[in-house]
Image (cartoon, rainbow, N blue to C red; front, top):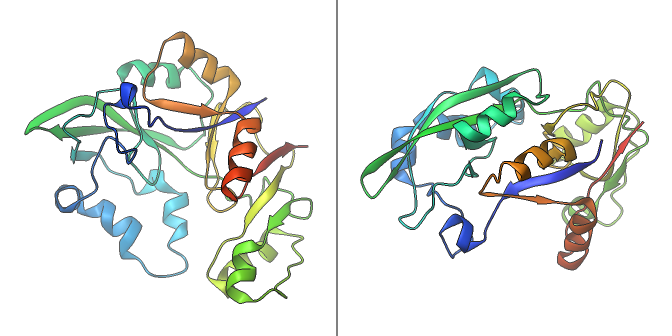
Length: 246
């Protein structure tokens, strides 16, 4: 299965806004209407806060009156959240016909734009891969640039297991990104969409699901091929994560 990185479009003709910061606004009004969301993602300062983020389906609730930019178009896909994204009924139907992560939810979501409620949307969330049972950590390649900048150029690791990886996270307070992410045979390679908690922080969509979205002329998203993602990362000096399936 070939996977593409899934993200929101920043094309003004598609999303309606020109600043590239998204169709919605995270402000005091958002927090007032959805305090639990702010508490979940920003209220917990412990190193274990990632557990609730990874198991988002256990904690997520419907979202109400999310402030929307005045110029925003009502696309089929709206990216606005640390986890998941909003979909309308058209895109929800496509997703429900696909092979989704076992733990996923569609939660009713409303936006508010020019004092008017925009409904007919769902916040689509799914639990993230932690790699505990699905990644061969001994075969992964790690991007140590952040850790070397912050903990010294002599910073090195010897990661053989999930616990080795987590030990580095708890000792440094920072999760290591990977430049090569190697999934073992426990990973479900038929998934049409998935994301990882630590290792790459990206959402991935299968070529099969992408084809359905293209045929239905779904709006509001961007799918980035591995080749393009690599070129972009090299140009920006950012981390590129190659997916390997054993």
